[in-house]
Length: 159
Image 1 (cartoon, helix red, strand yellow):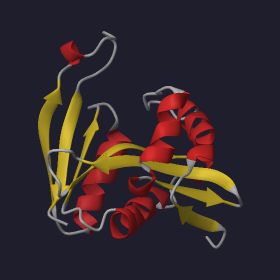
Image 2 (cartoon, rainbow, N blue to C red):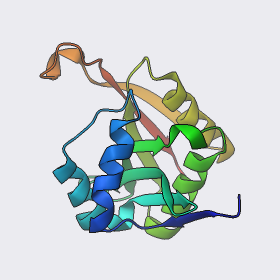
Image 3 (tube, rainbow, N blue to C red):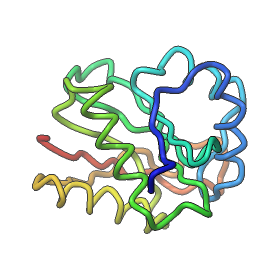
Image 4 (tube, one colour):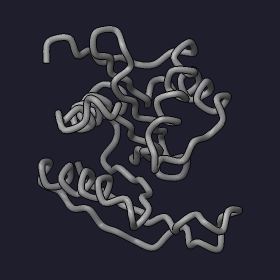
């Protein structure tokens, strides 16, 4: 796909990222302010991709404050019209090589019903010939909203 480009986000991308996630259930939508901060303060550990100058995907992540060799991936989103083209995997590969070359591990959380995210991270681990361990992490009772599922922690690595 020749018109696909990857780059670090900037402050001006926050609103478009918010809209992309808003239109991508089952992802949790955070405030627009949150995405503005992610695109500005955490731009080095986030990545977006564009197709023909339109936002096609975004990954938000950050260096885990207590595990300096671990990239915590917060959200991965690909526009519904662009799915099935390995864009998420390409974004994560570029993010690790360019924005987080120090990362030996990836951690993320996924709800048990989000089969596509679980498969994505398990396939990513397989393609990188490493393990993907799952652990209980955020139980349902921790959330403010009773309808929120628990979040399972995935730990991928070593990379």
